[in-house]
Image 1 (cartoon, rainbow, N blue to C red):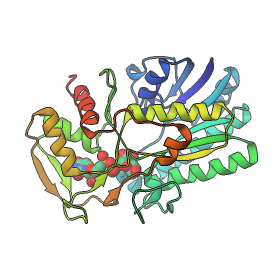
Image 2 (cartoon, rainbow, N blue to C red):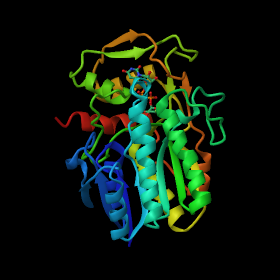
Image 3 (tube, rainbow, N blue to C red):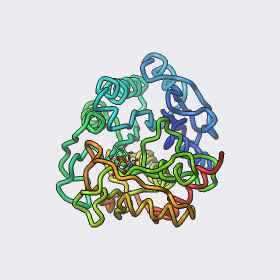
Image 4 (spheres, rainbow, N blue to C red):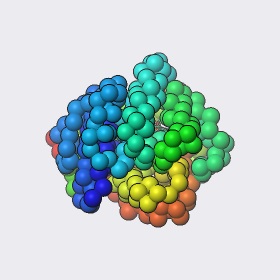
Length: 323
Ligand code: UFG
């Protein structure tokens, strides 16, 4: 049985991954500093409170257990915050990730799966965006993730540390069994905010600009179900466990939905009116982000199971109604 160390396993994506992998044959060790995660979201595995700032403790953990691979979800993820607090983003997303990588090298653990993002591409030059698309991030968040991708290439060459970088487009939805979901504080993501409005916990949803060069004037995004991301992580893990080379993959459904389409679909799923207010553009929002994920399908055999927006929103809605 392979032992997998999951950093940030109490957060949104990490907690879903822990549940997903717990149904397969892995021993799971989870580390989280609980700065934005929840211990009750960790439904399986052995949990340790810990922080990537503690390099020595990390090295000890990595040396003590027979760890076959590490997955890293412990990042800050808010674009707007990264513009006013670049120090926080470079410290956590770069410096602390480097601590983790150095601890791995010291402990001779050589397989790493990294949560990257569509934000590394910046303003797209073409869509759908494939892996070769030029990478010019337009905010510290995107730059912090791109820096780690670059570091990983160097660590592979110098230390033989093999990695798979998974560049998520818009991670969304929730555990289809209703046990887990998105619990960001503050919440900034479109789908949970729309559903909180449907549930009556917010008065209205603000559309950030309707003057974009898109059919209905609102931004287009590629929403991908959290469990389909989990599937991709397991396939990436299998790739590394079978000692194949490092790789990077874009993960999305290849279909874009506008903010208005998301709100309309949420109205259908919930049966609620969902009041809307039109606001100004949010800084740093590209008009259109859609993934070309053919490489992940071809090389990993990735097959999304929940590609339609309705099922993504329906699962997120089940979670929003839990209270
Ligand atoms: N939006 C609104 N109103 C809101 C919230 C969002 O109109 O109240 C719009 C945004 O302007 C954007 C779309 O809804 O056009 C989606 O916004 P999200 O905040 O849900 O997601 P982003 O596309 O901004 O961000 C996602 C990830 C980030 C990542 C980014 C780029 O959450 O971590 O994609 O890849 F950096």
